Length: 168
Image 1 (spheres, rainbow, N blue to C red):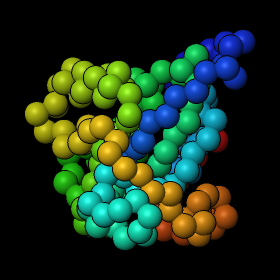
Image 2 (image 1 turned 90 degrees about the vertical axis):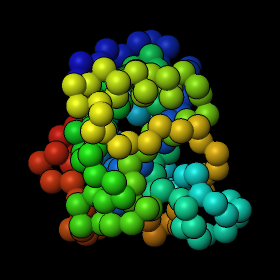
Image 3 (image 1 turned 45 degrees about the vertical axis):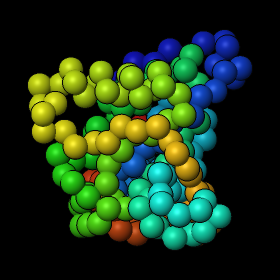
């Protein structure tokens, strides 16, 4: 990924949410990408009230705050596709269940349009099962899940270490 810094990088921020199986590895990978200013482990688009800590319908995800002047949505999605199996339904690595589904969520319709176009343009588009949906609700994960692999680098992660630390 070639990303050029712009003097206005610090002035504009956007937010997108990536669900790619266990959020520990997704956060560890994405937080090191150029243009990413902050990540937060959480859950997206569940069925329950956002004040509850249940996983009822939620997908484990990472809230990504980035500078669109430093990295664009396509570049972020490209990197995201490096760490997921886009053909696997409700499973990434050894993690199985609906909370481990893959998805791209946003409150900005332009992000969703870009993600849809990205997938449709792929030769394997008919086999990709990554959901692309507006963000309906979001719950921050408990502190024990924030920056988990930074604090405990030997914990389980479905992403191979050589890929996990590619941008570190």
